[in-house]
Figure 1 (cartoon, rainbow over the protein chains, first blue to last red):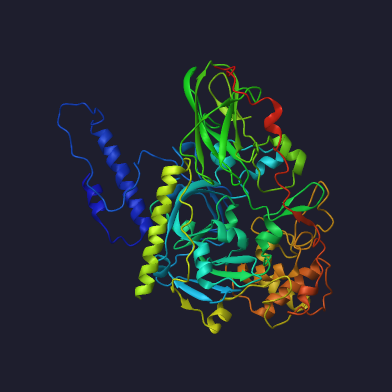
Figure 2: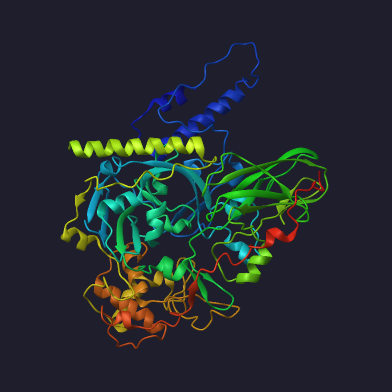
Length: 414
Length: 211
């Protein structure tokens, strides 16, 4: 305990990661000591030791282990993606530390005092904004999901993932705070003929995507806040774009340049990567919207039920096209469907938490959910997607995910 | 200054009025729509100088706009590729665990084994140049000169049998290269499924068989 309190008070550690590691080790040691010291009897009458002191920046209980998982270990350092442990989340907000990651060239460490946002191209007044100026504009906060369009890509191949994290963990939801991009574009003055905005990040590989001006003027945010604090470095510190409902890649992180153009730039990611190859050899281009999708996160693959009795079926639903209207749950592989309760309020372009009390009778069950949005779109089955697109597409997969519950209580993918 | 302040106050008032309307009259889940558009510029931000725009602007377009001066051939690009690219993409662009396949696969997209490479899939040679210039090599993006970028682009186009080994790639010739899959893209046709599934009669609320 001594060791732990001393560590919590230390504010000038040489590096954040070593501090975190020491703190974790100290905390683990403290727990071990507590257990060894026989103080697990919380109702004991031998006197109670005061708990840990306060600390300047909190961390979760060392008993809590949910973690992001690298989806492709072995890639060059800093590239690839990590997946959010959806099965461990409550409610609709993803803790910033568990928000999924997708980087092309690592996480840059950007000094906000030196960061600038350039707006140029087809504008009346090419402008450069510093952070303190961005903070002076009228701001908004909105809850939005981000989903990498490669989320669940393996399912196209009939290669079902074993857990919610593995099949859908390239999804997270945060409260984002920032300046509407429209405000900044109006500040610069859009010239006639402008139709697209190329957004470029300050990461080493200068990730860049073209956004239609109509969307840019509608609801895109230049976000500096995430869940009440500054955007995390992995999420684009000090500023990133949030493009509500659209594929993750276009929500450019570490954004430092906005080039107003009369056409899309056809960067690699829009010209030759995030396009879905169909069975006929053609590819969909500019598949921006993330369509209605849902997943049961509990009970789900990788989990175990302790015998028959009452359980809550719960999960997440979202749609980038329209507000989620309903989520239906089946426990018999789609023969019968029942409406789940949706956590209120249901925000547009945000994750929706759905819940349904369920009494397991102990027999085999196949559990899944489907999302219906206000456009009337119903989340399709795997078979419908493959029938429409074939198995060569790698993006925008949104098929119903089934979990098989066996008599013993084991849950696997179906 | 006074005028600017009153504008800021006006915006704040509009925003709060709007938020109240939202909470009072609109259905749950209406997230604070954007504040009213600025009636005129706030006057924030500094004018960008021509020099800094030139320095920071690395945009290239399929028309060739934005491509810098410089030139290179496949022959010149062979050495650059060997030194900077082959470790991840293989000696001949065949790819490996670290890097994607860059060469081959032309004509394979409609088969059971489609192979997506620069040659078989990428619609514009300018996109190839742009990506190499902004993002490659992955351990030192931005380190290739314009000449080296033209040369290694030419090398990859040549290995894909799209240009000759002695063809000079520069800001005039590169946009004229016709890529095999230039016409292989169609507009996003989604929703391509799921539109009518809801009316199948399956969706009525029923008692779960497991309940």
